[in-house]
Image (cartoon, rainbow over all chains, first blue to last red; front, side):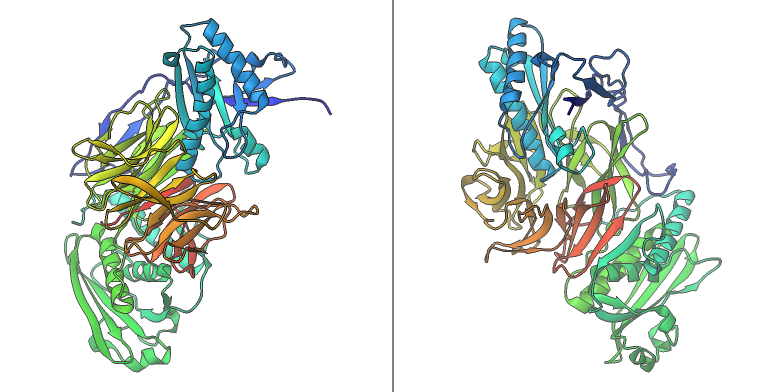
Amino acid sequence: MQRFWTILMVLFLGVTLAGCAASKKKGGTVEVEDATIGGSGAEVITDASASAVGSDDATAGEIITIDQDDADMDDPLGQRVVYFDFDSSNLTPEAQRVVEAHAQYLSNNPGMAVVLEGHADERGTREYNLALGERRANAVSEIFQAMGVAPDAIRTISYGEERPISMGQDESAWSLNRRVEILY
Amino acid sequence: MPSKKVNSIKGFQHAVMLIFAVAMALIQPGTAAGALTIEITQGEKSGIPIAAVPFRWHGTGNPPANLRGIVAADLHRSGRFELLPPADFLSRPSEVSEVRYKDWRLIKAEALVVGRITEKGPDRFEVSFQLLDVYRERVKVALRYTASADQLRQVAHQISDRIFYEMTGIKGAFDTRIAYVTMNITEENDRVYQLMIADSDGHNSQQILKTTNLPVLSPAWSPNGQWLAYVSFSDNRSGANVWLQDISTGSRRPVARFDGSASAPAWSPDGKSLALTVSAKGNTDIYVLGVSSGEMRRVTKHPAIDTEPAWSPDGRYLVFTSDRNGRPHIYRVSRNGGKAERLTREGKENAGASYDPIGNRLVLVTNRGQGAGYQIGVFYPESGRTDVLTDGTLDESPTFSPNGAMILYATRMGSEGVLAAVSADGRVRQVLKLTDGDVREPAWAASR
């Protein structure tokens, strides 16, 4: 069997919060395009200027496929995502190797900021998964700090189960979604 | 009190079409596409046999609403009534003076609903209805309402509430509202989230928030129905935060600024405090925030995950989910903190618990192990027993109706998220298909 790994990374790195104007409508006639949508006090927030890392003109949410036969398989710095077991925030030996390599790189390059994005699979409640993603991101953050990365340079954020990589509903999909993305 | 909604003529015509669609869906479940459909997936013909006669229209043109259809759908959905088919009716009275009781005894109706809608002026209608006891041959209730066209659905729900109360002794919860979240993925692969509010039957839905690529979850109604608290993200750099939004004006604000993140809001029964999950340095604990004072008090302090707080109806306790003993289970703690007591012991995992309005039962998400996945259960703290009410594999976000008779929750149909309702005794279950997108995170308001 050919050893062929595909890592799918969805990177959302939006910067600005565009158009935060609340369209308040009181009394009078309300323009309702569809009876099921609209009404008073709708607010529209658009994260319009999202862009993906590693690609000049990618749009938000673009799926970047990294074929690791092309990437250097042996270079842990080529891996930006580490995966976890179900309901666990313990790092596997493989994940530990990847995290330590990034920690080393970042502590040698002070001034760089890193975002650790924690994610969970869809099993369990959304709020529990938000906390679980937080704990996973924090597990990586602790190694970073232990290896000399400045705490100020690290930002952790959890999206829980809200941003799955794979939309499938089986273990192969879930295993891709239980992850921390190391973004810098 | 009842908030008057402003609709355009076009919106109103659409609403009439939706009413028609519901009526059709009830005759032939699952045939109306796009609009709301209610599909009874489990039920028994063991409810109270009731006959609801189409309300007689006294006016020009077509009747402004199918009141009988709305009332019948409400009563049917509760699982406590068997609606007798109008085709079997031997007469069509519109008030008690026209009723021949033997016509209704013949088809074995225990109760009879008759009524009429009368045009009183431009956009002004008078609705009268009577609920009759067929065997005692007497009027149980007779009421009259005056309403504009866009208030008629609400009038119908109030009639349903009154009938439900007279027949079961339990306060009705049809004239109430729900909130939920929809998510659609665009062709550009953006995730568009909408926070919606609607009547308890899914009609009159209104979008109150729309975000792109910033998840929205955990809506929670203030006890007076004026505010929604929910979890969202302000941008792609900051963690989750809890927001407060005024339903009538649309103005919103984050409840506080946190170093880490905040989530899982729950209003205290007096509406003065919010219980929250706050995460700092990767650890999540429960806090109570004074809504107007902004004062934060820590309730739990444990290295494990503590989240999903919910208040006891007397406001003295909080239940929450914690994995402090390995897998997630439900614990209870005084609102002032102190030692937490473990409540659930059965099952592999239990999470997302909340009390019924009396405080005797908790509805929760339970995983019984052996690959069973996640179902909705009702847990009795006194006995430690859990009744599993659903049979999905990813059921979640259960919310009691304000009268404790129904539970609304999120489930999957294929790969799509839909809302479903189950009676608290598990006898009747139905799917509410609201839109074509992914629908999740229902929350039932305590008052209109």
